[in-house]
Length: 610
Image (cartoon, rainbow, N blue to C red; front, side):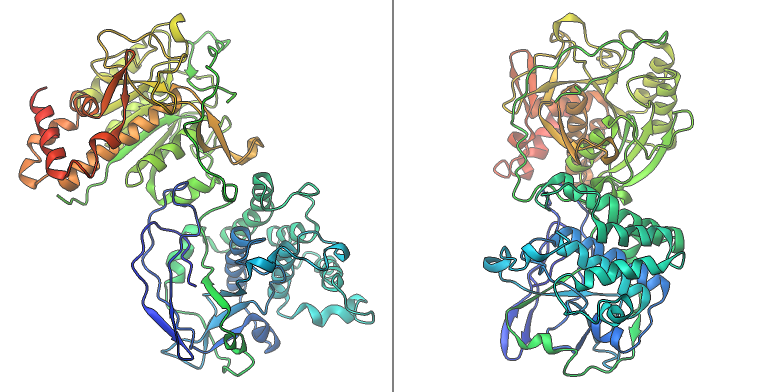
């Protein structure tokens, strides 16, 4: 079975044959598309199972030497394969160099393509959980140990078995721990000959000191630790040595093949004799730790009402991030700017969508835009990436945490987004208790350029009015929060009689959280902060929909959609009044049952009535 590393929709794969039996290749996205919205890759070519092949074991026995670049690339690819599939039926517990397969090309049948490793695996889920030798193993995670041994074998260009005698293990009876003790001895012999990050990844595989006793890949914290301790050092080593990022690998692997001139033989392709083997491509996967296996995302879960956010002890105007610590076809793409606390560049969802982040800038003294010490910006940015999967994102880091160094930074960020980036939408999940002149000037200028701005209403309930800039009702779209059933959250400010009082999901909202904050890869949060990027993402979908579905001759008439007033008119079409708030429910309006003609006609009608 062929498995593709990322994407959403795949064409039916061509049928392939092996020894007279008909088989179908099925494209499976290894990530959960409902968790991370990842742009699709170009369809990768299938390899017929009848093609000659050779295992990594055979290459090592043939004294084939890999270049440092090839070693580092293979290391990253294999580490991601282990992270995604270890302790599952897709990867045998005893995977090793005999499991890594390279195919010979049809154009050059005398040489193997070593840039594209495949894993051969017996798909036998009924027996996978039985480890007859578990009581005798010193290393409790054989899949991770196997990666460490593979990395050593790649580094030294020889099978681990060839070192048993030198390590003192060859004179003893070979048992389940022989290669483990040999690998530890071999690592000690490395000295400074192996680069630091690569060696650190091997050591982490062999020692597994980064995980607690009894944890497995079923635990989110375990997967996060594996990612940080093994995958990240290998990525860093590849980038520091050859300036190749994970994103670069996809283009690199589609370049002309690197081939090894080892003639195929019966031994090298013997794994194809049994029909119960499955194959899947282990090209680099753009994800780190996966969500819990079998877990469901339930944004409808309810949490307690949020308490008011405490005031920041500063002489500057009080600045609050509205979250809670508890809890016709066109080539033009919609562009969204998010003003927040930055984002964690190592977050899996960020990494998977890095090509969509078109601009970043920081106003934090000495800080970078692609770091996040608070978590707030990472959570909101990944929400936006998910809700608006076809939009380009621009990130302005205006604050390090719940303290703003200078309100003028917000004004400068708005100007940067509106002028330098020329975005369509600006989303702001923060607020002040009073108007700030410099920010007001920037908002007026952006509004004059028909930029659609969203701002969080605040989390102070009836104790305070709508915060600034969300209270600029004629220039900014104010966003309140609801639970999963559309009921207004108790921490929303009192509905304003002159406002549309739009609201969308803002409770138990699950999204990414920086791994360095040591609270899990994702967090459920509540607050108008998290409703705001969801609303901005919905607006981006509306803009994209009109560009895709409206007849070209109607574009001029629909131009008012690119304004605060126009977007409000369409949001009203897809919302309903619930106890003073307008609950945005786009699935009601943008329904297949309505049909494109009905939807487009009603959009144009609403814009004419402004």
